[in-house]
Length: 241
Image (tube, rainbow, N blue to C red; front, side):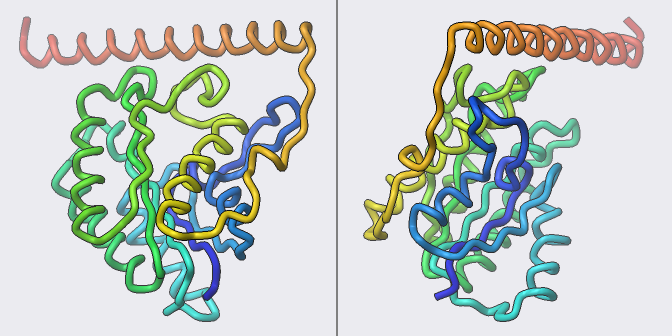
């Protein structure tokens, strides 16, 4: 067995600001560390399900020493960029997700995906997220893929002000949920990610962090409101009202 193989977007790619000195690492990397397994990542920032099929999987097939596996665990978390796009196509997403999960399942003993937080983005992606989650759960059942429920995932400490990207602690929190699912399926968890980090907070540091978060949240929310007004104006112009 070759360890953990991961595909997806920036959430799985990881990287970003420290949080109380804790590095922002991918939830999939934390999962591999917790399982004591090698990690092979192919996730890229800004990816959609088409990116996985058209770029990430071909890159793996061209570069991997053993492209047929088998891997202990295959991870695919994709859909955040698909569902936030103006041209969201649930039928194309479902077809692409099914194809990717089937491909992954042919090379991995277990495969795993996750649902998308309902309070996604600013402006919010809205009802489309629930539709995407229904697709994820349906395709997961059809392909025998494990699902981690992130629909209610959120909060100041685990998500950045854009309500899309996990913080360093958020990546660890996702990994802990993943490990709970895997442990119930019989996989051995060697160590919990939350025990691998050490940090200390200070009153001044917490205040500075809260002010920075509030500023960024206001900036994101203001931009989102402006985007909504601009779209509404475009729609009115097209309808002639």
